[in-house]
Length: 137
Image 1 (cartoon, one colour):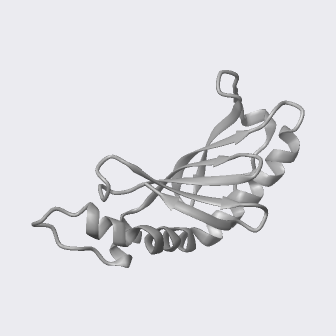
Image 2 (image 1 turned 90 degrees about the vertical axis):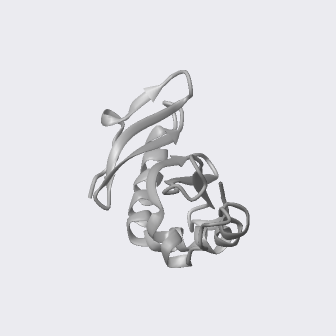
């Protein structure tokens, strides 16, 4: 398991966050942590908790997105000659791209596999228990 530490995170002064590429379940993704030099150590502890939680709950995150967006995909983002997709197909088309950690929320950014043209799927959670807030395109 990869552990985040301040020494290997790059600080993006312009945008005000630390960033790094990490391996999550065999996929190289970006992770950004919105923090200051004063609170980065605490934020890194939470960042490691986020990575561990996601590794164990990847399918739950994707299934939540499907539960919120499948109907929209099939009713509003399907061409006339295109068949509707199932929840399983929806989940299988998603692949994680980035994780963004702020003070109150964690956003999981997914490549939508063409389901919503070039748009991403974002699943937002809140707090230490990662309560689902929303899934959006």
